[in-house]
Length: 393
Image 1 (tube, rainbow, N blue to C red):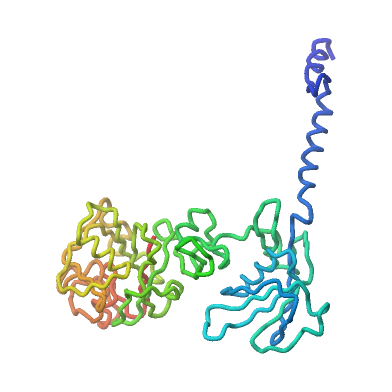
Image 2 (tube, rainbow, N blue to C red):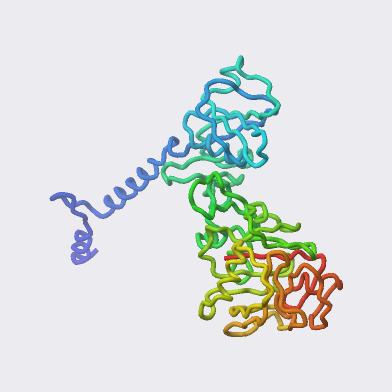
């Protein structure tokens, strides 16, 4: 090595105080620091819980930490994971309420307090098999742990620890489907837990989310299967949000007042759909009344309204947006709480016809049954047996 290269080698040094350390020692020092940092993620930071098999018709009395109301056993398990003292729990029904359950967290278990382990047909008991499970394997699939280092819950999928994503549990709901999509935690179309008011998670509920059509993020409002069914009603019904294949009426949740679009589509054919964009065009009374109707306000007027802001997709348009730019005004659109939504009879029949009785017009593109005409038609396509979904985002 030349004297110049030796001189350059001496320049590769790090100063700590007034001392100079050779570069290879600096690298070793940095590696040690990284290892030390990783080592700080201790077993106490990774508090995992593996639950034993449930024992039906039994409960443990005494050593009660607290009793809470939950909507599923998964929620009860998460409460136990979060509670350092929890060694077991009783999970039971609440008389007169089919959607809520008792979750009793105990600081003991059936072995330590055998005398207090009694029969009760309204409960199941489940104890903890082990804590601080470091490795995720098939034998502990479904185990939930709290990672204090990451300040997040994680669950074992049988191979690796994954974050408990928004919408997976009642205790970790999204505000709505679009909120879950924007968070990057979509798992595809399906059921998610949501809580539109964003407050207490005790009133979260499951909703079907379309995470694919037109970019995804659609929350189910109601479903129409029967031709005469009234699918928009003045009372909000949470269960309608998860009902995909049976008649279920509701309206847009009052705490989702910032919605921008409503979609009408068949459940199994997303290539046939009509979308209303409330931002399209200037606000006016017709648009405001239509939007309030979708949010549960009663309307039984006879007059039709001119509503601007629609576009559609269907096979007749080669599944392309129609119009290709901008929006259409549906002339003389009727909406009634006791009837549904429909263009005027003898209208174009190319947009929304979800009335409570048939309209034997000949303007429809296709139909599988005359009973569907005017009652179950989207974008000119009428199907008697296909559920129609009304969705919002």
